[in-house]
Amino acid sequence: MAKRLMDLLLVIDVEATCWDGPVPEGQRNEIIEIGIATIDIATGERVDRHGVLVRPTHSTVGAFCTELTTLTQADVDGGVSFADACALLRAEYRSHQRVWASWGEYDRQQFERQCAAEGVPYPFGTRHLNAKSLYSLARGLDRELGMAGALDHAGVPLEGTHHRGVDDAWNIAALLAGVLRAARSDPPGTGPVTSLPPVIP
Image 1 (tube, rainbow, N blue to C red):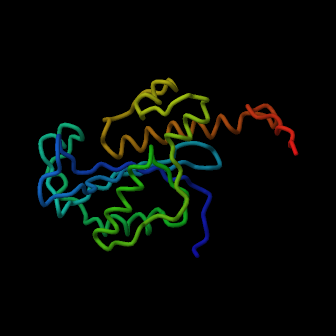
Image 2 (spheres, one colour; image 1 turned 180 degrees about the vertical axis):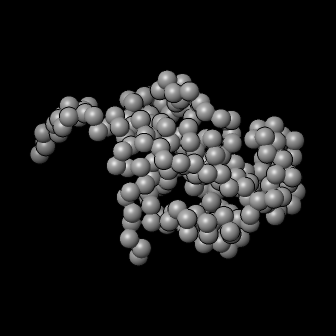
Image 3 (cartoon, rainbow, N blue to C red; image 1 turned 135 degrees about the vertical axis):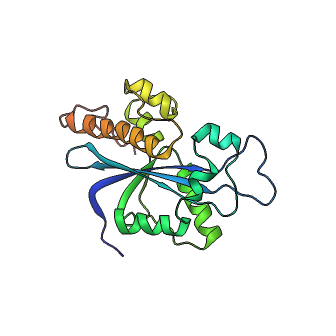
């Protein structure tokens, strides 16, 4: 088993082919952009971001998808294959050795589905953080928020274009970085849980 690295937290956000209605016959949801942002664990600060366009092979980018993501068929035609994108994650980001996070479970599930469908090795390890749940728990909210709602709640401006993977990953990283820094600023014993309840026989 590869050694787990705890120096960086990878934040991933994907955009996939989508339709305003049923999936057209013969097509399926495929990743067309992988947004990657990194957080330095030691400082709790965002380090960098990168976007990878991915060329779909079993679907096309229609008008609805372009309206949502701004990506066109011509954009993704110039992208890399899904297999090459997964290989890039492993080679350049060592994604199989690092903890990674996404807003909710969709991104993880889409990778799992597409890797299985195309026979591509899953590029991540077993340590996935659901940033959507983590943010709500850390902030004591009674429900989970969408990314834009969480940014508004945190008073953090949305940077870039919503539903572009590279920008969404950067914005999610801002929320996670805030949670990390807040957790470290609380002196021991001053958090919400100060003691364990007594054990009742």
